[in-house]
Image (cartoon, rainbow, N blue to C red; front, side):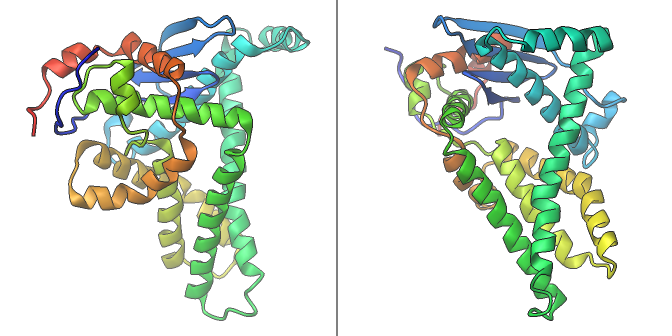
Length: 318
């Protein structure tokens, strides 16, 4: 039985990931792995290189510009790995015939085209649900609420409520609950090594399933920052109001990314307070994984990250 070391100062590892269908994706720099528990009970691990969506690599390093490209990269990679993991559980139906037809049309660019289309549709749905809908719902009370500031605040409250309600509703789905369990395994694996412990099932099980760099926290900041910006940025024309809200999405994503990036590198009282709401929301988007799921998470980490070397350069115990 591996020993769990004493409490150590959290240390940024640089790795991140996401849950997929019956598995975990882990990314370290330009390399990523996808570990999936197959229907036969084995763990299938694949390793790939990811080429950024950014036309210029330097853009991914410039503050407040890199956030936009990292956000798009996360969406593309997330969709790609979800599709890959789901392929293990697809039944032999007409789906494969449709895939062959699509391959004939787009040839070697099929994956990029489908990923791009899916990202565009996903952003459009999210913008409609979390940006446009709260605005129009708040406008229904325009005759009752005279103050523009109060109306903008109400729009913000509705946006937060819709966001939380969305998470609660999807968490009721059986398949999503399993994805949330793998989400918990992903967080626990990263927390295990970032708190200076060997990556074993026992140590991972004892680690927290909440992490400050989680996509849930990122989405919370997107919603929260949009509330603040939309209160102070006002125009009279309704169409222009919607247009400005949509045009500000890249700005909001950039600011949110910088906050998440900051939170991942520091661990002081200010960062803890800033991260708290997102961490609370993660109680909805993560579940405690079983040992089999933890094993999948460990396999994903070890495919792209040398945690033993990392622990060798770890900070001293507190």
